[in-house]
Image 1 (cartoon, rainbow over the protein chains, first blue to last red):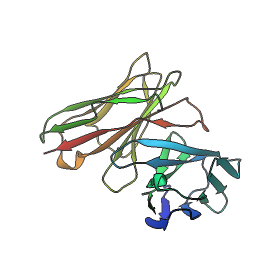
Image 2 (image 1 turned 120 degrees about the vertical axis):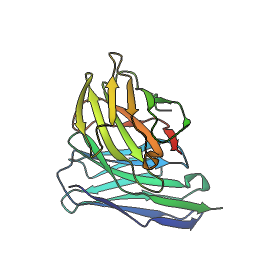
Image 3 (image 1 turned 90 degrees about the vertical axis):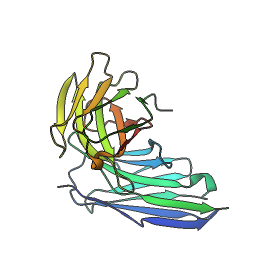
Image 4 (image 1 turned 180 degrees about the horizontal axis):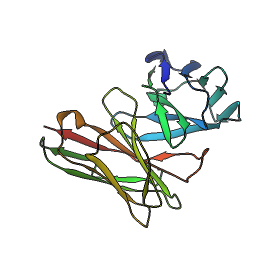
Length: 110
Length: 113
């Protein structure tokens, strides 16, 4: 059974810092991996999608990498801003469904 | 904005009652999935619908059921509500296929008292 773990569970950084969020998964037989952002009480906003054959994807200040063989992905956020404060969820797709981690709650202090 | 809309945004039900949640998928998407997210946890897969048929189910009891309509909109029905059913229910739409991207709605917050 696929299990997804995100470390750290919470992170507080000053504005302007570069930071890395980690995601690990136990079964490398995945179709893709998606990073999402979730604001309190809200739905999920897709940030980046990495196909199983890809190594990384970039969008603006965000860069996500995927090492399928080792079951790891990282989300790199450059020059963090207070507006980046949210919970970040990693999800791996196997067959018809996504398996989610519990998320990393990020607080960027002004 | 993802184009996936859910209704209602919040509701409160009494234990034992039944509830119906609705989802309108993004234009052109033929697959709808439902997830349950308890407070502080990641979403858990309930089931997926494709071409009006259930196309995969997670570890949820039969009192969780669904429908998909010809326009690809969907309903999640929960019978005999329990206190533990209190959660954020998320709908995701996508195209069928292995590597397709999923887009989520804003969720329905269900509270069972």
